[in-house]
Length: 157
Image (tube, helix red, strand yellow):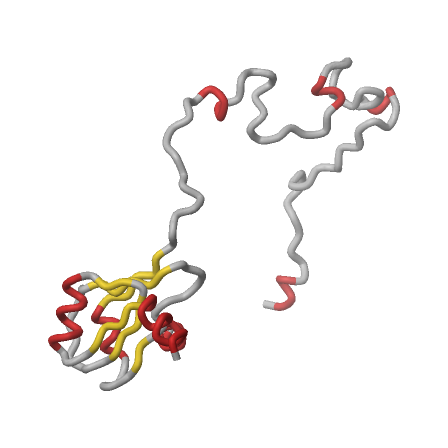
């Protein structure tokens, strides 16, 4: 097997010599190197993929639509079922949610939503709660604390 592998070779004509442009008139691709006389194609090396040769570009031909609000608040959503990961009596806040990997990245607010069930009593601190989430947390014996209220209480102390 090793003897055969050492004798492998490409078939005849499988590789071509590299084309050397601009190496004299006699080479066939000398002087203008196959680019013709003058003009942008003779001068410029490459073109941007979206360049359309002077035609109005597609991005400018299409109408502008919609609006992007750069001040929009990014909301991290946490479902009631996600709170099941915590022990009974635990205080669930942003740090605890990050530690468990339930929320990641940058955001402006945390909102607890009502999908799923909760069987443990936990104290949840967030910016806002849906009505169903508040009801399910209270039904399980837990407590909901709005973050604005928690900050005001901390400032008062």
